[in-house]
Amino acid sequence: MPRYDFRCRSCGATFELSRPMARANDPAVCPEGHPDTVKLLSTVAVTGASGAAAPAPSGGGGGCCGGGCCG
Ligand SMILES: [Zn+2]
Image (cartoon, rainbow, N blue to C red; front, side, top):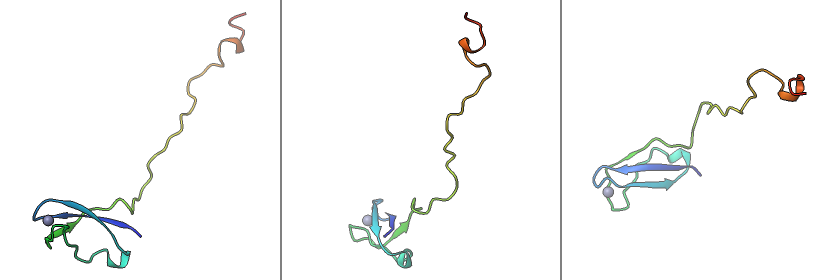
């Protein structure tokens, strides 16, 4: 079940609720009892590539002992 972050506009508290996606837009009540809350952007539905680049070998040359430079 996805979790949603909310922030209370009355006291500024942030809190997290687990609820079905069908009820994602239901109003949430602050743990302090304030009904004036806003839903924050969730990190559940992250789209886009993160660009996990592997360290690719770069540069020319085959090393010292490959080309007969050291012996
Ligand atoms: Zn509150």
